[in-house]
Length: 89
Image (cartoon, rainbow, N blue to C red; front, side, top):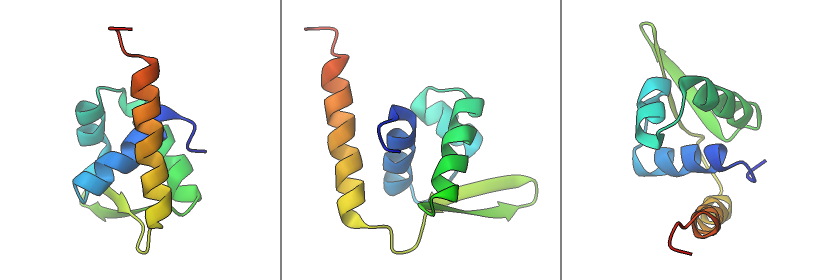
């Protein structure tokens, strides 16, 4: 599940900024709202993120008790993905 870079980046962003909506995540991660929404749906189904609604806006955050080793794995995966796409290589 964490092999997808979008999902790993979403988890990382939610760790840095406690709570974000789909639009803000899309802007921060330079991705489409559709891609972010799909990633969030998968992560929510897996119990890794939670959401809350404020009016018409849905905010997402890491689930309570999010396992620290899993977050560390996401960060390592992001580093690996960045190294794979480094234009200086």
